[in-house]
Image 1 (cartoon, rainbow over the protein chains, first blue to last red):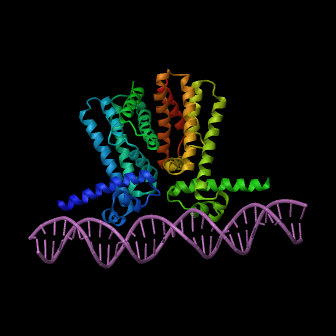
Image 2 (spheres, each protein chain N blue to C red):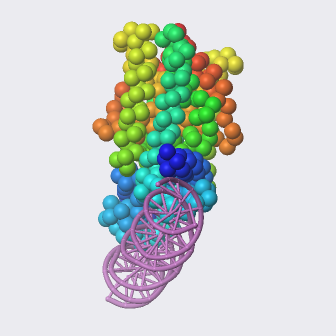
Image 3 (cartoon, each protein chain N blue to C red):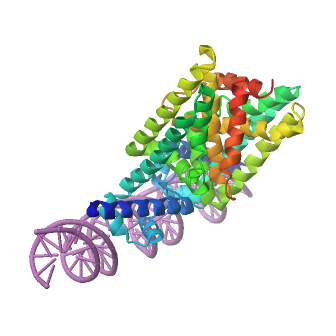
Length: 191
Length: 191
DNA sequence: CGGTTTTTTGAATGGCCGTTCAAGATTTCA
DNA sequence: TGAAATCTTGAACGGCCATTCAAAAAACCG
């Protein structure tokens, strides 16, 4: 277990460094050396742990997806009605530990680069399908069938759009405000 | 004038090739040689016309921004009421000649890369401010002041989100459907 | 037609980056 | 403690890419 622990600690450190370095320099141009410097390690050791640059990126995205999934589960745990669960799906995306400039930024970078990397696009597809089915499951209880798709699209696109803007922000974000705004949008769509 | 014409023709050809090549390979990894092959030219000639890779990217984004601006002006020309003009702002983003997979894709790439290129981020900022002010101008006539920002954010984020999804689409897009859906969203937000 | 300007390109240049590897440092554990 | 396993890294390798440049090709025009 001590063997595992060291590996886990390094993984975590390197992934955090990756998030910061990609945010600072951009997915397309960030170098292994830059990420390594951010982590206080060497480029060679990153390859030791992740095999390649693409492996590191995949692991980083996996890390973020796990965070998002956990945030959503937590929200579901206390939600009681369909509307509350709908709030919970939105809130997960704007959770305090997720809705920060570097994370929105790197998320958008992954988004833009997913189509060109089979490993990233796989993760991206899985996540999107999951969010989509959560939305539909709750909306079904609140709207007639023929309005489902319009409402889902409106809400999901809104969420994506907010992240897109957040990624470009020059100031720190306010997750609480974002959640309140999201609730207002939900109420707009489902009267 | 013949001098000017040849230069304009080449510019247009090279920009079209850039859109296709970036869509195929991704902004971060596309090479001058690939763009040149797409255009049936040499990498050296691209530098002759645009000075550098960044110059080419800036010109390409400028080209797309021009298209968007023109689509919006055209819509405004026939719109008579604030609500019609609001439709027109949305419709411009989903115009037949703009709402295609390669163009949404390249747009997202620019979006993701703008923060790391002063020339791109300048264009990006200008465009965003323009769209924002158009939205606000029309919404002012339709909503009380305290609801302006929520509505604008909902609509603008929706537009961004749709493009984001469209960029990932594997099938051709249907601009007409997109416009219809956008109108429904407008009606949802402004009853 | 010639001379001049504009356009095109193949080849050369210089630099940078991901990955590998062998050797050394550190940790583990019997 | 000492051998084995794990971790770290500097240096080297091989490849790729944007850009430059000189020279050829094409277009222009008096």
